[in-house]
Length: 493
Image (cartoon, rainbow, N blue to C red; front, top):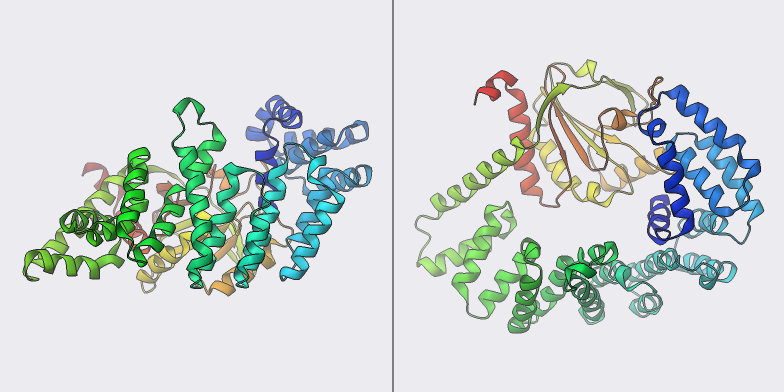
């Protein structure tokens, strides 16, 4: 939840004086923030904290709070925050605290709606120019809550109050998907179309007009297009669906993979079966094995029988394996992994040294990180492949949590989703540098995964994620099996 506010601030204040000041302060102290010793960081934090009494503007308080957060001085950060809230009761820091502590903690739409109305009453949007996005987050969240309770009219009511077009799809799309999953295509379709049309508007802008907002908005094109066109396909409106898809492929060819499922269905539905079969084959060869039944049916229809299918299928899988093997070579490295000793959910110590002789998979994640979470079904399946292999250990390193109750939240998340993961808390700071394990390993973004061999050397490092379970299983298998082999043997091949 706090990540939402953090992102909101980063986006809405990008053009503001306060943000410029934060960047200036950061640049002045960048050396200490990124490479300073723990003593240097503590010294800087003490200077910042002692200077609080001289701060005049709310944005100066926010800058100090952000710096203290970066330096790992949460206790001082909270003190500064409380001081600022008392000094500026109608300011954005007080507002943001209320949003975090009341709105996002509210359970049920009634409580959440009441909290939202309190926010706009005490801190009207008009009082915070260039911070409309903060309110859009609330509107999207509230609309999403109503959608989950299958109350589309209330959800739409709040969606229609959103301010920023470039971000609007991030409210409309999940609400549309929620209603669609509940079987309410009548309510879902127009919401998905709004998200799709907004993304198309930004993705089709001339290159010189594509600022960061436009690029952000365009990222949702494949998802909204796929969902909306999926409705058309299910209705049998193949020609209309195909027209939209081919228009999308023209302006954004990089979105092809995200549209492959509805594309092949639309091609087949309009009688262009061979083209549909070719798209389907490419989709399968990239690890989407969930389309195999369709592939079999198309193969039999176009070839007159299933003769040769098994050989054909094996060839596609082998092609994928070769692609993955080539891909993981780009992730290869060879350096000693820093030792660590972290606590698991039971409070037990787990160290890298205790796992010597095993291939260790480290998966860095956070409860607020959606790309991390969307890869978990695939990681769960990959771990299951090695559940009887005593020489392989998966560790899910929870890092960069921004909530005081992070341990409680992590346990709740793991239990709710029934993930059989060995989770470790990355909250032990190095006494010299003040860094947690993610920092020691040079992690700059999550999800991040490391494959460590039996001798304690990092062999592979990868970032990003995919929801494709079969692809993750195959990729992790190739990474783990490669890490089992002596490095010299791989270096020769």
